[in-house]
Image (cartoon, rainbow, N blue to C red):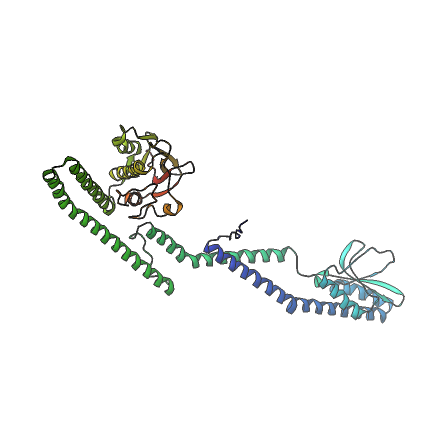
Length: 448
């Protein structure tokens, strides 16, 4: 069994940048929190533990060296001013030990170390919360109750709220930074796709960008697009000029053939060759034709009817049409007729059914999210996958199953260029049920 490499997760550059920034913020926050715990928070808590131990020792000494009357006054002063309560410890007291986390256990150990091994520290006595410290004075046992906030570790809703707010603001900043970083690249990607589709003049980037690197890239890209547009224009002019200049000698050859060649069969063969050259010149002129300027609503059913008219009486060419009568697209009527005629001619030449040699073509139009999808499919042998990628390239010929020596190699290239000039898209692929399918997408004209 052949090994298949694992599929890589494909993310846009924005999400890659955002995730990297988010991870950087996360790890930086964790490092800052750990540093705060080790350098500030834990030492502060330990100092508080030492202060509490000092308070307990002072309270014990005060109680030992104070008579009964002064002791009552001392206990009242501690309760009112220092929030410290002294109570008698009974053997039956219900106790919940203090120290569930590692830091709390460390605090308990420090306080026991300073107060003695008989010290008992609890977080709840008789279901009353607090910081309870149990100690002995001679044979009597006491509880000293204090505010537990002095030793409470990080936590609580306020801390979580601030942490969540900080995280949201940080992620929002990361998203903003990722968007600002990737915005010029997004524009460059869109401009490159326009150049790829042949729209050289519309691919114009900002040459006054604030960032010097982006500005240099934009200037270079614009110059490249201008040069490509000039090359395309010069090629079209060259093709048009050559094609036009060939028409005159071809006309003379046709006349000389009719007048000078006596053999009827030879005359017909020569006339057929001249007609073939004339058809190839027409292809050159179609490919060099400038962009249409009169785009507007076009009734699709009428254009299809006009395109299939030359083959209505051909018994070897069957065409089925499934198009709504009132469906309109945004296009140029003559150009669209030329597109469909090229596709039908291509199907007539190369799309014969392998079983009986009859060419069967299906023309179907469907609506999809404001677009009209127009499909033209034959039932021929199709083409190889390697040839399929280059079928719309100028002067490319497919494999022998769908190619003869009479074409110019411009048919599908003309179709693609014409569809793009009308604001649509064109693609061609092998149909799963057999044959070659051409798929065009045009803007729908909504009836008012």
